[in-house]
Length: 195
Image 1: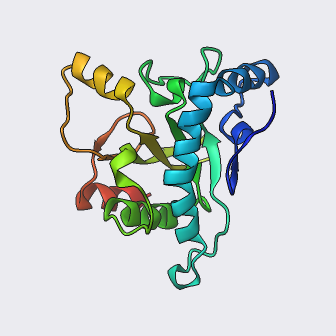
Image 2 (image 1 turned 180 degrees about the vertical axis):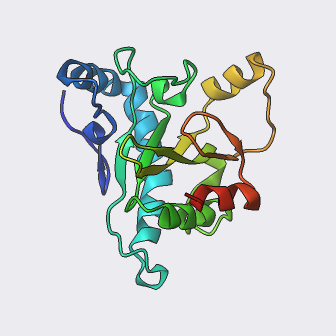
């Protein structure tokens, strides 16, 4: 098992880190290294994350950030995240959470660019969901990130089985607590930066 270069700026093991311990990281790496999972993570890296990263480093956008850091990707059964969905696309190597510089304002600004389809070369046909998320830490500061996932046959069948057969993708949501989701509207964007 090796740390495969999935795209120019992303490697396989970046999607496998967790705070759940070394054994879980190893399990995540083994799971991610399966051929079908490498393929999905390659699509996520090349078609979704690379264009977003390219947008971040454009001088005219003034993000002052050259790093798109994956904070959560592959989740095996040992990855303990309280209240995480059992049907999460993370469990199938189809999603990742990422941060830019950690500020609410910049995370919102990047999310808006994605939602408004202003990211050059981003393959919107492949996106199932894009979620703007935040959660208050124990010290009172905010953790903020963007969740993005690819559309797969497995995901669509799961939606159909749950009678949630959305015909419009990508779906855009906002979460003000990291667990509950509402449609991304101007009112919810305003709440996102109100702290």
